[in-house]
Length: 421
Ligand SMILES: C[N+](C)(C)CCCC[C@H](N)C(=O)O
Ligand SMILES: O=C(O)CCC(=O)C(=O)O
Ligand SMILES: [Fe+2]
Image (cartoon, rainbow, N blue to C red; front, side):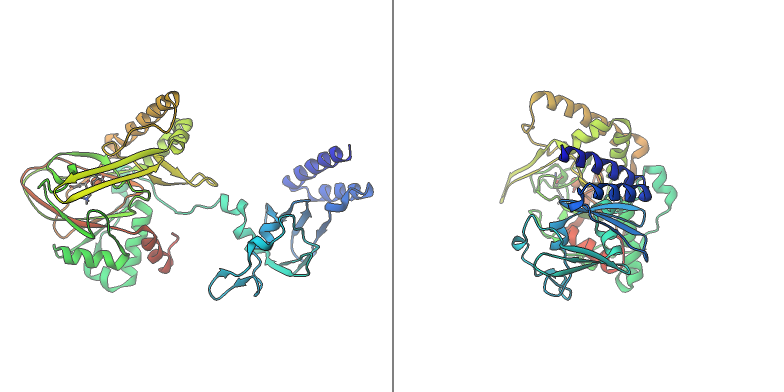
């Protein structure tokens, strides 16, 4: 009975809080205390800052800066930034989280200026700046974009007139490197021009941004249509749009292409913004978008050519999204390398094929295709987690070199230059 009443009161109060009707909420909480139900409902408000909070049984409800946030008590104890709990020099936690009582509750909470003080049962005091709490709350994070991007089709990309960066200034100035990285992060592709057409210069370029990710293809790779490896990339055939290394648990982050030579016809490179296409799917058929983000798939690379023996398997959905804000961060799309689907029952399989068809239709719209002819001196960087690439069939002798970059290190460089990454 009491419990029922308390729940009712609690939900009314929460609704009032949500509507921002603090006066009413305060009134109710006073009313409740008359009936001595207030043991866990201590409510305090500060005069100096516009901040109120409710101490629930298992969490703190904080209203500040036009936001209602909820913090678990263990979380509040765990993130304590006091000298004994956190090393602010190394930014590492010293507190042993496993030593925190999972039923912990603050003994008292008080506000001074813009700092909230929690005193825990053992006397330890944790202090949080209100702005830190806003910034680090789940509610705040949910609204934030992890990686800002500009989605494009061919026309939008051409209109944007994204400039290429010159090789020398790229090597010599941080400003140019930053500009380049900003474009790579926003559009998922970027070009460097006037690069001497050698593998060594391409490597130097790559190393300016990040660590090179060595794979079964080597550190720097160099390929022609010589069938030297068991993959159609090493032929003159056309390749439909795809992302690379879908058969790795973590597909390579960035791909670098430098065409060192082409004496012949065809061989243009196709680029398609996979996130733009996925966004169209989300708008037209949200349940299909969801399915593509849920069904795990296997991709596989089996090679037995000459000395090269490899068997790689990568598992993950086509669309990878952050669960808390639904932001898309990785598309795994390679119809050549997709392995047997056996991770879901037959009826889901059929729905998956329908969703895959919708995505493919978007990816294949001619207006989404950006065609470029790679030439010696012009190096292309592709975000392999977002942009699909392909190529036209070709004739004659064509030599391409390049490498993959470790995504973490590209982002690291970007952040060090002050970019949001
Ligand atoms: C030639 N190069 C080393 C760039 C990559 C070849 C990888 C091709 C493979 N089918 C894939 O899509 O992952
Ligand atoms: O030959 C090309 O232009 C690209 C081939 C390809 O898809 C790859 O190497 O990953
Ligand atoms: Fe490829």
